[in-house]
Image 1 (cartoon, helix red, strand yellow):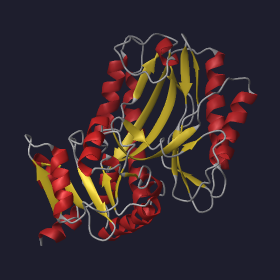
Image 2 (tube, one colour; image 1 turned 30 degrees about the vertical axis):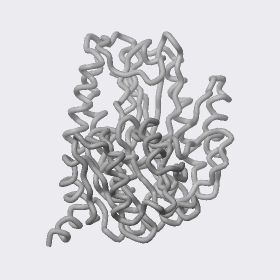
Image 3 (cartoon, one colour; image 1 turned 90 degrees about the vertical axis):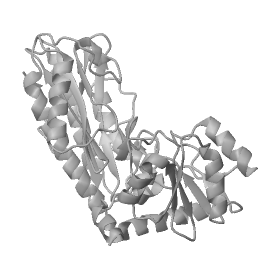
Image 4 (cartoon, one colour; image 1 turned 45 degrees about the vertical axis):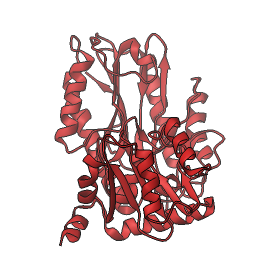
Length: 385
């Protein structure tokens, strides 16, 4: 009865988790691992359905080739693992324990210590110090299994895409909620507060990284966000927002002009938007990342604008500090990755003038069997307040 209730509360059917695990195991075999240690919270969630805001604590999902996974988590989190995942074998450690020692004991307990052990060496939350302790206790370097799960995660199932469409509705609702706050005299914080209120009320969870909410010259600086700056007449204000549903993230960006804009901002926005749409039109199965990037890049550069960044990146499951999967796949010049149905990309062409401002246009699109589909439907016009 308890198991049945657990399965009913999972974000996906148990069959989908089994299918994911089978694909991951094929990649493990190719990498030469009998057992894989998984510490990235996105990957743990992908395989189990379990996640926690305490993912900064030491936690390891142990994935053998020939038996169900075993989860080692901080004792405080073991009941959540039991409640929110489909597996039965859950081990905990105390706050006075050395979790590396406990990991070795758990591997030994399940007869896995002498197997070919792999580790995700590129995981954010498995430090160099922890890796050195692992090597010392194992007496050997583990097989590098970086990317083993991420390559499977690139292809989203219909159920995953359905969650991302819901996240897209949240992203649009948040922008709607903050537009009235974009007026002279208000601050970026006023806008950010309204955006977050709309985001959360619409059903979104916390985002994979903070939205970018910036006005005026500060917008000309990359990766900046709200910082109490006052909005002035004729400012260019941009919002790079997201939405998150069942930990699946999307991105959606728009630009707002406060007052009467200079023509250059209108031209820059149109260049980004129209370049984006050319990339979206080029996106279909069988084409390369380079070809999609080129469609956008050629349009923007053909109008005389410098453009020296990637056009987009894969997006899906995300926890802070990142909502994207850009370390796995990007839409970028020279990238020969072939697009497949189920891949999803946040494409973000933007133009900046340092010391003056910036314009931004972005949406999240999925590759389909015959072409591509927008997951974040929203008004594409330059907005004025």
